[in-house]
Length: 115
Image 1 (cartoon, rainbow, N blue to C red):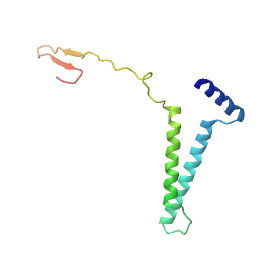
Image 2: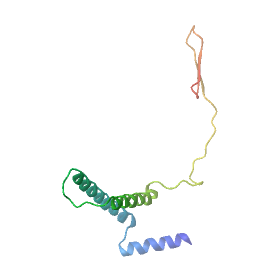
Image 3: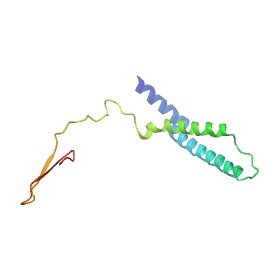
């Protein structure tokens, strides 16, 4: 049933002309631009220019909202690891390489870099 509702939701959004990922990306760029403006005004204010800046609280809230936005966009690029798509760890036997150097004694190197 969940898949049917997901498909219905996708069709509805498409019919309305809404692409959620595109909207998130546009919001990301808008927030990034606003953060850069805030930091630039803060730099001017610290240099003694008389400008109306933003409060530290507003800047911190915008940074936190931007971080939440980026975290919400992460599954589109990096899906969560589940038991189904997690690679199984396979125990492999150690590899041993023996080097014969003629008259000198042989040198053995194994996977753990122990001689």
